[in-house]
Image 1: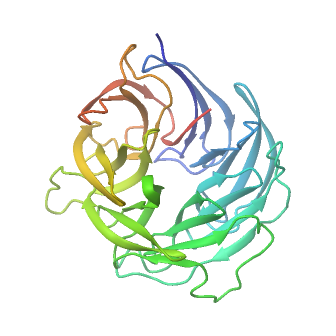
Image 2 (image 1 turned 180 degrees about the vertical axis):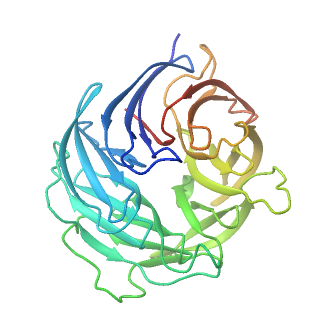
Length: 363
């Protein structure tokens, strides 16, 4: 038995270069936990995050610049053809998510969430300008929370949730309202949860039972939020990683992902440069997390994003998880084999890229 996967990879400019200096979208193929084929399929400026339309016919990429852009590409198996582009609705967009009829963007630079309607069959962009939802507020961190910083959008049934690192809030907006914008100055528009001051909420995922796991980039915690009316209330927190952090250093969690069976939560943690693995327990209406292991990724890996791939594990014949990590710091893709029982894992392959990888999307 073999395992195979195809991936779309978004990238950043080289650290010594300006945006537009050769970064683009790569297609990478894998077999049995190792990288086999890789190719730069299109050059585009700062495509730091990607999303695939449910039809598989359109791939979206943010351009993390100021002002920001949202580009659409027609997908033909292993080729991408530029189709259209629109403004992202703000500055430095860092995340995009696609539903059948909308594309949502989180603009980190100025804290604006934006939405564009798309054709449900093909995913083609259906408007020249997005509807925008500007955030307001700040937090106690002197360098990172002087203003709003929308960081992530998650689809949650008939609405979407937007985490704002700058304001320590989650906001909720209805789906199907791509032409409705939030007026400037609507301070409390859509606030669905407020995290402890200085959390810096980054990425999130829904756990079994409806609880949200929200990773705090600034406090290195995973916060559990329980549904409470139309919003959520924090009911617990655990440390993202068990790796000790030297004095003067920081642990900065990035992406969080859930295994297909809902039993394992994985968190990329920059600084310690590990993939933290937690067991998800859901019993009698109570959801909790238990830290299992921290998989070392190598010095300076700086794991920005990762994906748990569908299908068999890295070694034929077992049930191990294959995880692909975008190691921004070393400009590599890392393939990991993770044991679902113990959480222990190892790097099985490394693929150096000429520009730093930032996002991993299964094709």
